[in-house]
Length: 278
Ligand code: GLU
Image 1 (cartoon, rainbow, N blue to C red):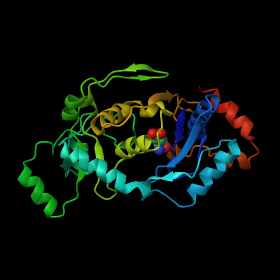
Image 2 (tube, helix red, strand yellow):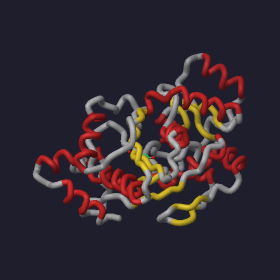
Image 3 (cartoon, rainbow, N blue to C red):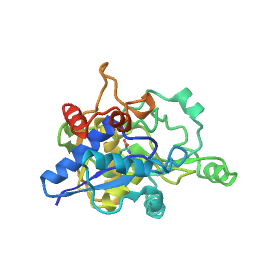
């Protein structure tokens, strides 16, 4: 049975881009007699606001999108993330990084594509720090995060090419993605680790999401191999863009479903408009 999920962050109202992501997940499951789950990606507590959980559910219902069971909240799942992180530590494929954003910005090679969670490719400054230095800096209480040593992880995983339902075979040298953050000190996890652990725990076997996350999927495939988790099918759909071809996003004041609804647009019109992007 097909199990999909829609995984919004409760940091704002849903806009057309979210509506498309939710619709793809819902419709694909429905067409195949499967189910769609709703999962709140709420680990970034600095940006989450409580009113957006019910608001997102209400907007989805307005669109006619239904999900199975009680939505998961990633904030309830910290123990699962912690044990996945411990396994990665035991495998020696993660390392503590003490760099500040400013230091990275000065040394980073190029903008990181896709995931939008980390703006730059990390140049590996802390990758080879001696063990004693790591220990003493951690003991001193310096801020650090855990990064995946992508070259080492890539070597352990072997070929990580994977197939996207829409974009075909995806092949990439994992080290070209840089050493991404796997766990932040303050929240104990990052998007990459949480999404992989949760998709497996919820038996999600079709991950449908926007094509901006295509490059992140290489990281997720590596993490699945390292943690011996199942590999779901992937479908990265096009993004909803405005008239100038710019991607809609909350931070660009994208028209929210709320605003559209208040101005008399029907759910049917919203669905017609956004599925034209597929
Ligand atoms: N929380 C992500 C977003 O709102 C979705 C990530 C995913 O589907 O894996 O864009």
